[in-house]
Length: 582
Image (cartoon, rainbow, N blue to C red; front, side, top):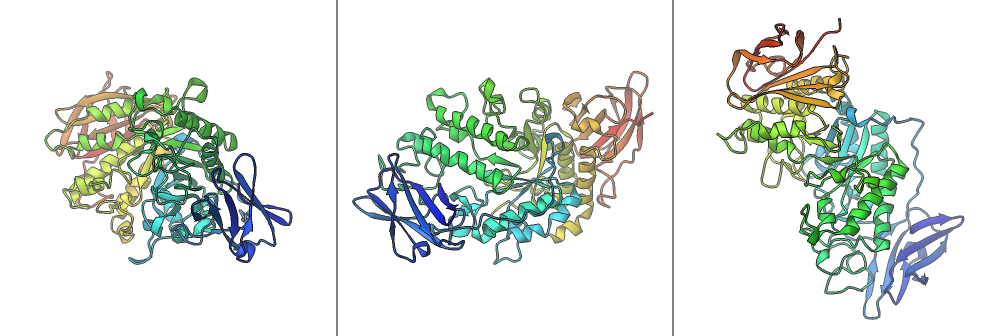
C-alpha cells in the first residue's frame, strides 16, 4: 500500500472501493493525471517511471457525482499538515553502527515529552526533534532511559497535543518531519535511551481526508474508514471500523511502520477503552465493540513478533487485568497500562484534592495493586499531560497553593516523587516536573530551563531517587523486585511505610517511610518488618536538596530484637532504608 519502489518503477496503491475512477497527479506525472487501474477488491494501482524522492502526488477520485482530491492515507510525508499533497520519500536512513540494548521493564524510567514545548526556542517557534536532541544529555544525567513521546503524527494547523491526528502515517513537518523523528530516535539510542510513541486509534478526526474518502457513506457519517452507525460516535471524532479488514490492516500496518522503519521501542495506545466500548465503559456488554478487542490483541501479537522486547502500553482507565493478560488467556496482550488512579491517590494522601479529608487508603490500594501477578504491568506517575491539564494544574502548583515552587510545593512534590520512584510499577515523569515547572500543561507553554539550575537541588534529588530505583549502588535491589508489603499505615498521623524486595536480604530489602503530614516527629515509633540496623539511603528533607528544608538528620536506625524502632520524621518527608551487606 502507498508508494513503493519496484526496480525502475514506483507503484502507487490505494483503497477506494466505491470510486467510479481514480487518477494520480502531481510532479510524479508532470502534472498530467495518470489513470489508475482497479482490481476486484477495490484497490487502485498505478506504476510510474522516473519517480524520485521529493516528488509529490494527489489522488483524484471521481465518485460519479463529485471529484475529490485526496492525499495518500499511507503517505510518510505531506507538503503541509492541512491535507497537503503526499510526498515520495527516500526510505534509506543511516542508523550508524550503534547497537541499542533493550531496557527490561523493571529498569525503565520514563519521561513524557511533548516535542513542541520541551525545548522551544522562543515564544513564536515550536520545538522540533532537533531542539529536543539538545537536551538528551541532560536526560541521561538525570537517569532517564525511556522517552514517551506525545503523538507526533501530522496534525491540523501543525500544533496541539497530538491526540487529534489528521494523518497517522506521516510525521508533523513543524517538528522536523520523518527525518527529524528518525534522527531523534537514533540520537536517543546512541545514548542508551529507548523511545515509546503515543498513537491514536480510538478516533480519526472528521477534518481528515479519510472522512468519506471515496465519496461513499451512510447516515451522513465517515465512509469506508469509519463505522457508519452509532458505533462511529466518539467525543473527539469518528471511530474507525475495526471490523473491516482493510481498516484493521491500516492500523496494524501503522504499528508495524513505527517498530520497523523508525525502530521505536514501543507504543502507548491512547484511550483503548473508547476503542472497545462506545461509551468508554468497562463491563458494559451492551456497548462493547468486540472487533476492537480482537484488533488490540492482534496488533500487540504482531508488535511482539516484530520486536519481542517492545513495550506496548494501553491507556484504558478501567483497571481491567485482561488488558495486560495474554491473548491465549483472552486478553489484549499489552505489556502495561497507565495507572490512572496513582496520581489521584497521591493527591488524596497530600490532602490536595479535598483539604481536611486527607487519606492514605487510596495510596495503599495503589501500592498493593498488581495485574496478573506482575508489579510492572502498570505505568505509575504523579503527573501526566492529563492530570496537569484539563482544568487542573501540575502537582507542585496545587501542592503549593498556586505558588509552584514555595517551600510547601517543593517538600510535598519531592515526597510524591519519592513515592513514585520507589513504588511497584514502571515510573514516569512529566517533562519539567523535576525542576518545578509551573502552571498547567498545554501545547504552547515552553519549559523554563533556567529552573533546572535554580532548583538544581530538586533535580539532584530526582537523580538520587533514580539511582536508588535502578540499584546503581547495589543496596536497593528490592526496588526492582515484584514484592511489596505495607507494614505500617497511620491515618491519624498520615504516616505510611512499605517494604520492597526481590530475593530479600542485605542490599535487597528496602523500606520506605513517608510522613504526609505537616507535623514533624523527633521520635516516631513503629514496627519494622525485619529487625536489625537500617541505613538511610535517601532523606527528602536533606538541606542539600534545598537550604530551607526542615531536615531531621538520621543516618541509621537500629531496631530492638522485636523489630521496633524510633524514627525521626520531618514534615512531608520520605525516607528510604536498606541494610548493609555483612
